[in-house]
Length: 216
Image 1 (cartoon, helix red, strand yellow):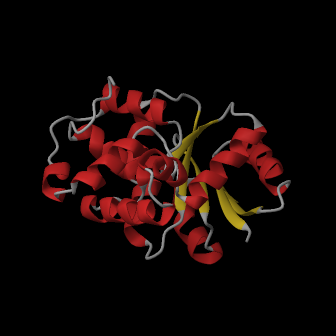
Image 2 (cartoon, helix red, strand yellow):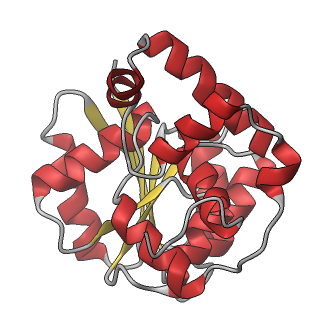
């Protein structure tokens, strides 16, 4: 299967570079480009991409607003991968809180760009768990009660703790000595109970609730 991508960035050179990298892969295809977040909803409706590469800072509708609007108004929204110059940026954290599944640095090497798109499209792994932990530590509010209200079972809580380290489902299964399908079930239950769209949102909830500490 081919993963369709929408590139959103006000810098044409960035768009050209990302398109060249992604279109060179047999399993990835750039469906369209946009220079402003306002263009995202109609392009998503028309092309139905699997992943949106979203510049976090744009002069019109920025990546945070565009991500929040897209996820709130689309019945089956694509996954959003934020593209940023700086990793430790409050804009990046707010985009993740708005629903983005991960972020990608503009200076990333081509193999890293390709892998990031594939990971986000698959939805099984958390991108840059250490960087996300630092973002939560720097900008995240503390004391949320989503974990308490979710009433996770002991095993679900254990799975969530392992998710915060960036482990994939097979890695969690190996650690717990259970089957991958069992882990998938637990992960699905965790996401449902937290009202989280994906692993990134669940991990952010875990940090902000004090379930795990950003300081380690």
